[in-house]
Image (tube, rainbow, N blue to C red):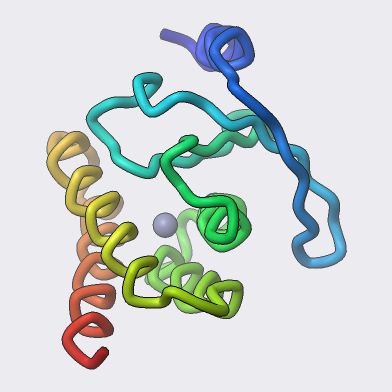
Length: 140
Ligand SMILES: [Zn+2]
């Protein structure tokens, strides 16, 4: 499926939308049913400027998760860009931190399984972030 087809399908499936401000820029996003990407709980992403997130992500966690997608994608190629974006997203988590960390752990574990055949550099980024989440959970 090419990206424009994915965006077309997402827009047809959306159950809501929202906005957020990040680094002085305004973003709109669509909320998609969990069934859109059933293998990744709490999924979110950006494709050609189109931003989307799973309806499973509670509203007060959306900005944190989406900020990761935007910042992580913007820095692809920079070593540890994923775990760096993860550290930054936590600033948006003002309550229910353990619940947030557990949700993100489920997402990253699922991503590692679903994308197991991806490039090693990408998997290394995911692994580093997954391990950081585990570490933070053990310190909670
Ligand atoms: Zn990332």
